[in-house]
Length: 391
Image (cartoon, rainbow, N blue to C red; front, side):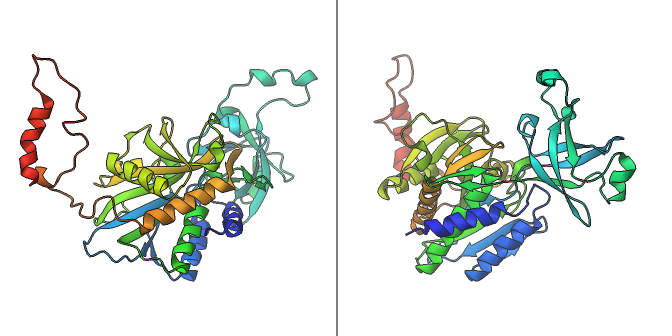
């Protein structure tokens, strides 16, 4: 049984920790401490990615991995203006449209400062004339510090400099109907679901068929993500993430989504099918989607050259990188899927890095092939010639 109260607590604690990409030490320390409480062994790489491990009973030498990013979008001081306002550059891929009016914390080397991101305009004009004409770009966003600063010298006297990090307030709300609203839910809520799943597996002393690594990455927001953190013995990589799902189905915010593809192309056919079968066997509400505008740690793993099967599961979300929303039931269902996946057999009990036709997989057979024109070779006959080598 997944503890909903504990899951809610973990979401709120993670949202309280500032972690724009490049400023993630404290959230990694938090997760490391949580793993230590569970007596789960882990390592932290130079760049800050956590690689934890639960041993399994399998003796094949293969392992699986689940990856979740804990970095968020944010901003950085780009220029100190002569009027004491700051120009900022975005951290991660997000639009300045979602920045106006956001309360923020600026972290200098020695102090923190409060402020607001605002549109760069002349305020107080009649009926806000000209506000609608401002372009939607970062050149027209400024950071107003809540300090008595009126020129560049005033700002620098506080110890603020170019390159200082700016964190967006999450300001989370957890409603009685289960909705969770705020910034940086992507992907703090996913980390909470994974942690509560680990607590369940460890607490119930569940046996795992294979070793499983748990990766918490810190640069997904800028596209690099998992990088070199995957070890060679890992044959399949499951990514947990946030995705905006249109509310076109009944109760979509209580489900999880098993993604078939994203902006980088399709995920592994067999691992994706395996996850759907797990969800069906365990009565976990789910749907299949093509996430055409999404990028995840799975894509960065492949770009880094890892020969792993990849799949992505997402909890229900809305308004990525803006005022985001998810639902507690979707996070509970995500945790249930992760537990079911951990205790399931790997997609392929033996999945060597390289093989021959005799050991390779099938996606179609003669019964699922279309009929071909008389002038063409019959694909079923061609493929059936290779069936003998499977024996």
